[in-house]
Image (cartoon, rainbow, N blue to C red; front, side):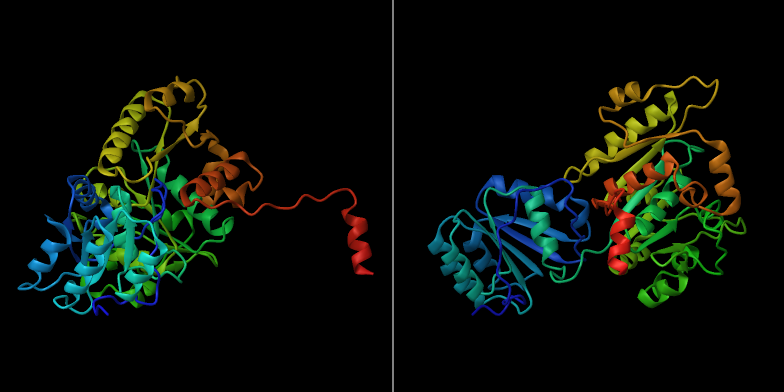
Length: 422
């Protein structure tokens, strides 16, 4: 039996058809080498290597299939993951037997083949193969297979990162982000954390009426100390399901960050929290671009004017190009219906963007102003308002979860309850 596989008790399965909204956790820093038989597969693997979820992986592609792999590892150490393409059943089993003699312990193997046969799956299990994917494969098939090797199948999915950003300053993106996080935690009962990335002017602490002594700045400026216990100490509890990673909102220092400044804290949050809502400030830098591209889902908040329309389109076009295997970013219109202000209609906005807004949040200065000044969410100030329902709707779209339907009570309910009491 081949000694390189760690998952010999698990049966490899054929990857399902790719879906743009699949939640796939990113792979860690691993080395991946692929040995392909066809240019079609090599192109798919190359495209997978450019996906954000394999950004930390070091990928190398060679042609020659299993024969080339056996020759290559006779005199070289094996990587963390080997991807092998094979055409014939006999080639697969014979090559795996040869590979077993030169393969290092701990290496995981993914086989790409064209034979859909249960008997072959069983033979691959005996030889310790981690995954078997039916050709032809897409880039997302490869991403799903490699990333799946480093996730725990029996554990619930964790670490969905939702990034919320404004198309322009002052559009209310932070307010929308905080209310979405509240809806995810309260209405969807999903443990969540709000990370305020606007360290100089962040408003999450004010909106949630929290003034924690520590926050995200302590993590960013102490990257070597970041671990699960350290992050737990930085979180401020807002509700049973919602925590806050607040910004200091002070100007006693300049917050200039490198491109990877937030990587460690986001990786730790992803490993410990089912949902992370990033409140990203309206600025364009290396780290904001990286945070947006690296998120699982993105919401752009815009007001209905020309500058917001241009910026929203530019953001969506860039993010679509950078994330070809993810679903497109969503956007919503905010502050719709300001008196005496000329506006671009939602229909015209959608025509230019080529997609419909998730919702159009009405301009309600009294309600939103009261909530902000009192450190409350809209659901607390006006639980029955349509804006509250809109935040729940956005939360459902971003998380892919439906709200638990509340059963309607009929006019007979009081009588039924009395009978049950008896």
